[in-house]
Structures are given as C-alpha cells and as structure tokens.
Image (tube, rainbow, N blue to C red; front, side, top):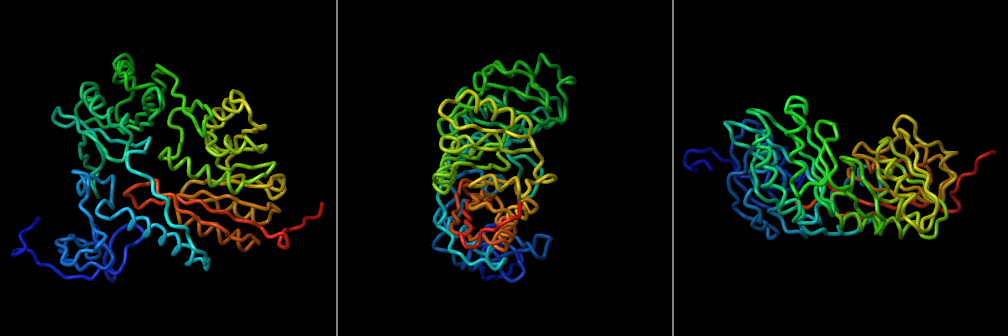
Length: 423
C-alpha cells in the first residue's frame, strides 16, 4: 500500500453496490467498498475506477476475508461482506433488473449455498523460468496467482491441485500455458485441457501419463479424448448419468438440488413437460419421474448422454432428447402447445426469440432458470406482455463470494388469459 503522506487521496461516501459488486460513489466505481462506507481512494490511472486506499467508516456488514489469496486472486470479489449482506444485495440486483422492465414483484431472499460445495472450476497454468504457476487470474490481469487450495471447491478438487501442479510442471515446456476445466465426480476428476501446446507436439504418451494419477478419471486435451480410466458417472436427483467431456453442470450440488426442487414443485402434477436448453438432463430426468418430457439442446454430446440416461434409469416416463439450436430455430407456438409446462434454462444471453414464441403459445406455465438478471428481466417482460403472470422469483446463491447470480422463476397464465388458436 502506498505511503499516505506521499499519496493524494480523495474521500468518498459509497452510495450503493453496482451490479458487478463495486461500490458506487457518483460516477466512480470502487472495488472492495460497501454501501454506506466512507472511504479514501487514490488515483489508479482510470478516473472512474480509483483504488481503494483506506476505509474510514466501515459498514457493520464488513468482515475479514477468510481466504489468504483474496485481493490478489480474481476468483472471488465479495469475501469482505457477510453472507447475509451478499444475499440481500443479490436479491436487490434481481429486483432492480425487474424494476427497470416495469416488473414489480417481491424477490424471495437468496437461498445460501455454503463454500466448499462447488464441483467444477477453471484453473490456469503457466510455466515461466522453469516454475509452474497454477491458479486463477489476478484481479484485472492475465497474470496467474498460484494457489494451493480454494475455499469454494470440494475437498476432492482441492486434493487435485498440488498433484496437477507437479505433473504439469514436468509436462509443459517453457512459456506454455493451459486452461484446466475440472469437474468433480465420485470416481475422480474429469479434466478438459485447453493448451498452447497440442497433444501431438507434447506427445500423446507423455500426456497419457496424467491418467495414472489416482485423482483423475478422464482426460481430454484440446478437444482430443486422451483416455478414460474410469467412466465419470454422476447422479442427478439420484439418477445415473454419464456426462460427456466438459459437460455443463450446475456449479454446486446443493445449488442443483434447490433448482430441481423449485422445478419439481412448480411442475406439480403436469403430464407433459418441454425442457429447453436441457443439457444432460438436470431438469428433464427428475421431472420424468412424473411427466413425459421432450428435451432440446444444441449440444449433441449432451443430448446423447440424456438419451443413455433415459434408457438406463428405471421408473421414468418417456423422454425424447432432441438436438436443436434454439437460437436459430426456437420451438414454435404450435410445438410448445403440446406441453403443460415449459422449463427453460438458457445461457447468459437469455432466450429472447424463444420467449417471443412462448408468449404467443397456449402453454399454461413456464419455469425459468437464469444466470443473468438483465436478460432474464428482458425475457420476463416478453412473457408478461404475452399474458403470463410472474408468480415467484427465487435467488439461489450458488456462486459464493461472486457477483454472478443464479435465479429461478415461475410464470403462469391465468385461465382467463389463455390464448385460443384456430386449428
């Protein structure tokens, strides 16, 4: 920290937290500051983003960050806030995003997920001067902050860190880099590596030695499947599934359980469900215990995994798993009309085109899962303009200490507002 006698500082009163988790004072964004605090800031080279120099009057919700890497590591942004303050802020971010679209509905308090439950992460490795640094990017930089543990992730993924660091130090040449996508499974980590050095250049035999590590179950390198020592089978709501390499899964197990419970509750006794952006079947499989499900996704490996799970798990109603790009070819209102309930879990970009078709359909209920309050509010406005009512919004705080937000929402169409269509 610079010497206060040699640094010009400015006193600011932090008014609120922005959507990215920065303290806002007028037109300035101060990373690490909280609403209601009086702080001193100093020049950073960007007049809109000064450095936090000192806290004169701290918020009562300020705590000591529990991680020794906090401040350098860019993996977490909010460890200086109590869990209650983080949950209240995330709830307010969702409420504000809805308000900006003229949607006024109480947002349920955020459901907290404890640290240590995260089952997937992306690490970066770089080899410089013969030393390998494995960790996360430094805040606001491409530099890597080496870590030997992470409070967010499961014990199994933490056990993988030192083993992976030693192995990659031997494998990677000088100035090489790699991004490691790791997913925790009951039989070991499923690893997908994006690297500056291809498998052919490094040698398949050398890369294959990583599979000897007991912590690994499967290894892919720059899109090439190197080997599968043990099939990394997982369970979703007690149902077995063999996910493809780099499959999308909810970030935490507890978060997944809460989202499934939300979907199951609002699906009720529905006999037919359409699941859009279904992935490997996070919602399609549990809902198939009661209803016939038609599931759609643009990822062929995910669809194939869902098809296998539908065949091999007993006690399920029929599941149709269909490959389809829902951005280029959203389901039509006529196709949607075949379902009692539609579940939709799009990426951050949301599902504007599909929402417009839902608004024109005669579907009675929509269960929406979103990781972006802004695009969710945009799509919600479309549904409301089409006659739906937004009945329930719940934040599931599975992105612990992060500005990222996961939410679940339920829309219904009153019987008097149900659309008719000439046949």
